[in-house]
Image (cartoon, rainbow, N blue to C red; front, side, top):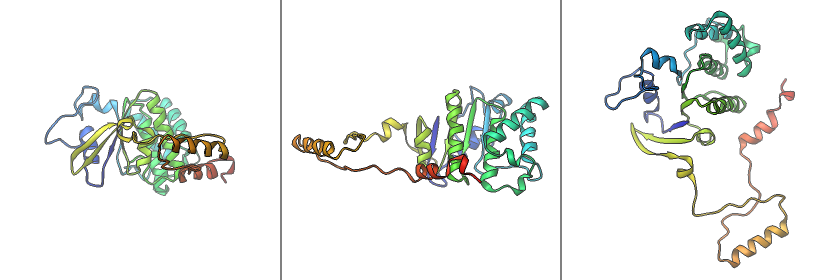
Length: 247
């Protein structure tokens, strides 16, 4: 799983469009499973989610997925079955017969992701997949991406939310103005080798005091000591993520 990071205009979406054959590169080359972008073999192997979902507004959610299933070569029976399974997976089964034009941006995004999943391709190219989603929707999408990764799918992804890529990517690259600035594994890029973090549980005050005294005796500087903070996302999920509490 490979993440592209960079500010607006850095070249992330352009890279994706080149990879799926919508644009031609001025230099270099791209291949999908050894095939040139835009060829039938490359298209069949790829699921592309653009930054802005291009859904047909007059179709219902179920009709949208059945259409994408038909385009992927599924039989009518298989397309209907997979469409219903995916609508349930992205929490849209209750809106299966509603027209897309009445969907919120977040609902459209989840439907767009489902439309990419229905063909079960080998490679996924996802441009800002959690754009417009609330925290619960973003977690749902990250879980889906994690499942794809566990199945051995190839995933190329971009996001402005750095925490999303940090949680799921094996490698990342930093782009700016079309140039590659840095690239590597998260372990290589993010590991702070100058400090060591020790987390203990339960927080026994006497034991912690003794550990701090030992550290000072050994000439170590205590950079930080105290109860860690949960992320706002983690707390949001703990409060609102229980389905039993959902009206």
